[in-house]
Length: 409
Image 1 (cartoon, one colour):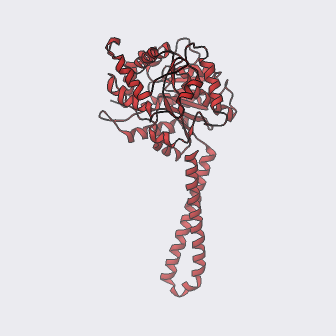
Image 2 (tube, one colour):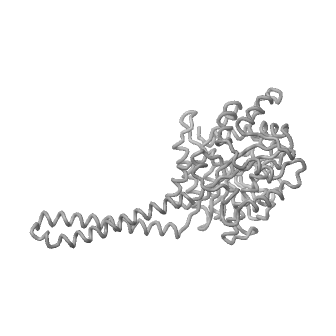
Image 3 (cartoon, one colour):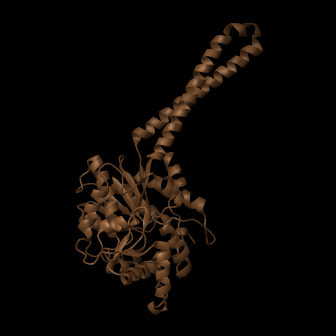
């Protein structure tokens, strides 16, 4: 059975609970959604794109919650593409967002190609791009699958387009990301921008803690990759449908760096609730604990302990509860100018190597065929050999520095 079918089956079985969780607690993910919107705001502002006309595609959109919030934020040219009927069964009803039910990723990409979007965003979906060997996740094949999809999406975008992936991330990705979104992501985005966005969203939700309280409590106190541990140690083990993943990795970024311009960051986005009971209800519904199980079969005391142990649920002095959540952020851009520069650099490097090899072969040829003349022309050959060797060394050093700078960014 194809990997896509396996993952779609998981989603189909948990879709009703997933939608119920988001409907019952619409403000739970306010920080997460607002941070993603803040990134898109900055991308558009930096490039001079107008919110009313910039083409945005929400790829693997799920219930369409992000598209809905983008629409509320003034983005009018939106297309949500989803592969699972059960996930967006209610979303197409009187929705201001264009919805496309794609039969496959290939069909979804074809819809992208028709629209040539400036922004393609994928929230919490890429980690489901998995290849299996039997029932085991083939991590190498999965990384290749993700890299292949990134390349195909970039081919579908406008020439100055940006792919924004916000998803679960391995510790290697999180440690490689030099910037935390709360401090810096891109020009024009920082704590004030995110605060203003989130405060506006959750101000109408009485009993829910405000962003400042959540950030103050969680800054610098995030457990080691709690989101990923939660899925692998609890959801996969204790639900009928389980949970497999291929989270973002440093290696994926390195693969993308070969062909594209990338930037990686992290985002701390605690989920917000009015009470511990609401928090537990959200978790039970969203993560599939009710699939083939009655509510009374769930040991809430044990589940509460697991949530605290893995995700650090916490009660706040000002009222309300929060659930720690941390995601990786990866932007991928294609650039014709950058690509041309890369090709020119490759040609220059190849030319230097060819000249250096030619000089070395010439020295050997003179020694073999005209040893008497070698003493005469040897100084000239040596001088040119050292010149091209220096050029080669300088070029390799330049490429190394550029590579390290790119990773640092």
